[in-house]
Amino acid sequence: MDREEIEKLVTMNRAFKLLRERQRKNIKRYPEIESLTRKIREVRERCVGDRELLNEAVENFERRGFDVHLADDKDGAIRLILELIGDERLLVKSKSNVAKEIGLREELEKKGIEVVETDVGDRIIQLLSEDASHPTGPAVHLSVEMIAKKLSNHFNTEITPSAEKIVEFLREDIKRRVEKANIGITGANALTKEGAVVIIHNEGNIYEVMQRPKRWIILTGIDKIYPSLEDAISAMKIQSFFATGEILPSFVEIVSGCAKTADIEKKLVKSGDPEKISLILLDNGRSKIADSEFREILYCLGCGNCVANCPAHSVYGSRFAGGRFALVDALRGNRDALKLCLSCRKCRKNCPMEIDIPRMISDLREGNELFNFLLSHARWLNERLKVELLKIILSSKLAKDY
Image (cartoon, rainbow, N blue to C red; front, side, top):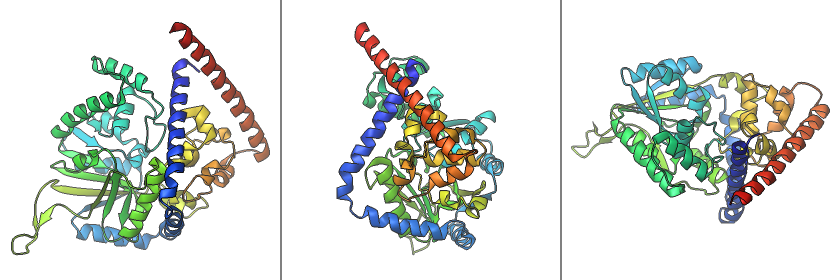
C-alpha cells in the first residue's frame, strides 16, 4: 500500500464522515423520512418482478411517444444503443449505474465512439482512469490536490488546487463537448406506470444531455418502475437524503414525452429538442433474481449509504465494493471478495429499505460462517493497523519536509 492509496482512503473516509454528520444534522428537519421509507419498502415488495406493471408501463410510454426497447442482457443493450447512435461518433452521458453495470462507455469506445461523462465526478474518474468509490459520489476518494495535479498533467495546463477552480475548468470543457453532440444518454431514478421518467441531479448537466437535438437515450433497469408518480417522488426523496443528507436535490426532472405545444387551436404540435426519446429497459438477470431468495436486493434505491457505512470498504477501498455493490458483484460471479465482509450488519442498519444484505452475503459466501467471521476480522484488523501506521509515517514525513 503506497502513499497515494493511503491518501485516497483518508480522503474517502473523511467525505463519508461529512455525509453522516449532515444526515444526523438534517434528519430532525425531515421527520417524514421514517414513514416514507416504510411506505416505499412496501411498494418495492409489491412491484419488483411484477410483469403486469412492466407491460402497463411500456404501453403507456409508447402511447406517449417514447421509443421503447427491452434488452435481455448486456450485449442486447449495447447492440440497441449502437443501432440508435447510428453514424454518430460523439455521445454525451450523465451518471448511470446501469451504464456502469454493462460497461457501456468502455464498449462504445472500443467501437471508436467518443463518450464524454458530464457529471464532474464521473468526468474526473474517466480522465484519471480511476475506480468509482461511491455510486453517487464516484470521486470522493480523491483529494483536491491529487485531482488538480493529475488533471494539470492530463490537460498540460496548470489547474489551481481548489474545488471551485476544478469544477469551473471541467464544466467549461464539458460544455464545449456537449454543444457538439447530437445524442445524449442518461439513466433514470424511477419510471412510473403512467409513463413518466423521474431523474434527480444537482449539477444541471442532465438537462443539457437530455436536450441533445437528435436523440435522448434513457438506459435503466426493469426494476425501476413504480405504480404512480407520487411513489416515485417519495422514493426520490429517500434516495436524495441518504445519498447527500438533503431530502431534495437541486433538480428533479419529470418527463412524460417529447416537447410539444397546443397553443394553436389546441392541436398538439411537436416542438424543441430532442427529436426522439428512446427508453431501454434492461433485464440482465433481474427477472431471475426477482424469483429467487435474493429478490430483496432489487428493492435498492441506489443511495449508496451501505457503502458509506461499510468498515471493510473503509480500509480495502476498491478491493471490496461494500454493501449492496459487493453483493451484486458476487451474484455476477466475483465471490472471492465476500471473504472480506465483516458480517457487522452495518449495511442493513444504514439501508433505508432495510435490505438484509448480510444474510444474502452469508448465503453466497463459501465455507463455515464462524470461520469466515473470525478470518475477516483478523484480516481487517491487520489492514486497519497498516493503514494507521502508514498514515502516521506519511504525516511525519510531510511535517519534516515542511
